[in-house]
Image (cartoon, rainbow over all chains, first blue to last red; front, side, top):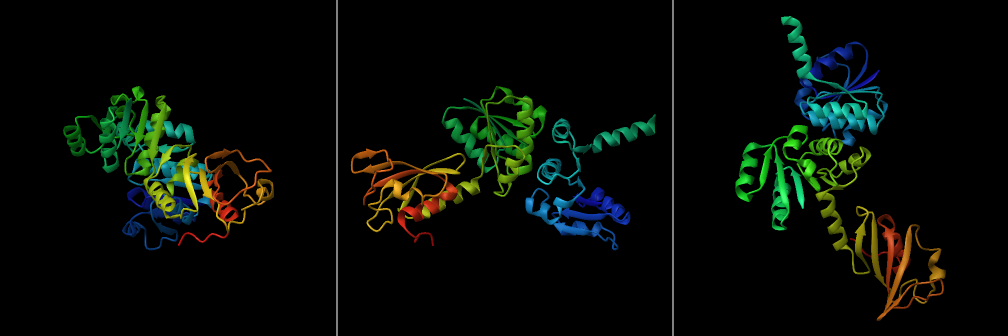
Length: 131
Length: 226
């Protein structure tokens, strides 16, 4: 499976490390080259430095042949825009974005994008712990 | 007219100022609290502190009452989401959105956002228009700059001088129509048998892509543009 991950932060880098071990084809995009230091030394995927919402950067990452795109940068709106580009322009099958708020829900419904809500997830987990 | 502006950066600030001068009723949405306060104090305009892509902020700003929404933050991703949230939840007659990176103009269009304004693109277009010689003048552009009305003055050495419209018709590029010939004080609507003369001002409608090809047909090989 060809997987592109936008954002090499805490979530993006760990996800990339885990998926790369599972023999997936992984490409990680981040604006800051330093972020790639979070990847394990044996990481066998590819890294692309650049802005996730840049069409050229998405092309360079191989979006046209990607099966999965996951946008987990710190910027919600960039995640939502990048996800829409992946879906509409490159017809990526499975698209996921991390975001919060009511607008994410609306865009998710309209553009067939899965949304990960960190706040909702955390609350759910806390509720499980205390109940 | 009631206008809501999202983004109080340089573009937003001067836009609000200009709109107020033109007696419009303006509401500004600005994320940065200091900047919001400063603009509110300075321009005496209603400023809502908040994120323009957040539905609650838009509601607070009463965007649903606006005739025009202008989205001009410095971040294309924020502009895109703000427009999508606004157009999904309110019926605003006109929405104008700024594209910061010219490359994103195409992206916005493919994501369904039609009316974009690109300052970089606009300035580049203006410079290009100024840079062309007087051989062929752009009188008007429309359809977001992709269609133009141009005026060309026929010279003695022009390849079309003393030729009829019928004779040159096959050489004209596609999507291009000769509209009018201005000869001294006469307005001529060209037909097949109209013969073009030296000094005629020819008005044509063309797509921007074909403007160069049209110029070569009318004026001969292009010797303009450095």
